[in-house]
Length: 220
Image 1 (cartoon, rainbow, N blue to C red):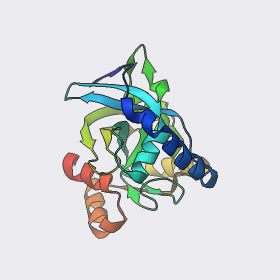
Image 2 (tube, rainbow, N blue to C red; image 1 turned 180 degrees about the vertical axis):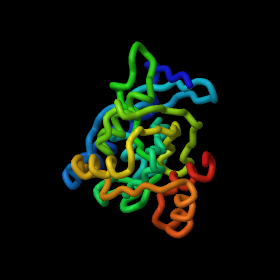
Image 3 (cartoon, helix red, strand yellow; image 1 turned 30 degrees about the horizontal axis):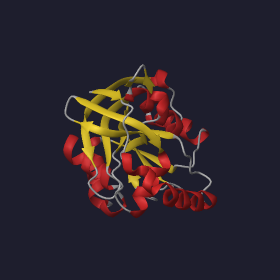
Image 4 (tube, rainbow, N blue to C red; image 1 turned 90 degrees about the vertical axis):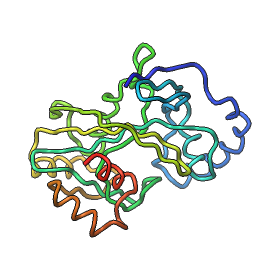
């Protein structure tokens, strides 16, 4: 999948600028974890190529609260598999989406540092997210495999590039690393073999993020 950076952005965003700023400035006072970086948004998407631009995260954040503003954000989603099975992460109450739900994946919007010479490398973002959320260094990643993409047709309109990332560590080692590097995005992790994972999802379907259910059903 080729991802190119263009200078063209959504023209009508300036119309909403004052409104967006008011909501963002109000919410950021009450949530110290909000951060207004630049993330990749899509102009054109097909099976072989994505073209887009970088825009302030606050546009995407406000869109997720009030309705569609014409923004399609591009994100990476990584199902992380260690030597003992897949890693499940329980989201904290401090995140903006899927609070308290279990996730099969590590995810994040694609930030500007992932682009080099007009092209975006999603694997750079994946490695950053895995380190931030699990504490695992990229040297322990044995493979990164692209599986496909999913688009959330609800209010967020996020397009997720879905990957499987294989980690050459055992579950006990990963849990130790995770406990040392605790972050605000999750509260606990669990490692499951694929057959146990499907049973876990069936029993706790109301506590699983919708994106994780789609990933399991479509790719596993």
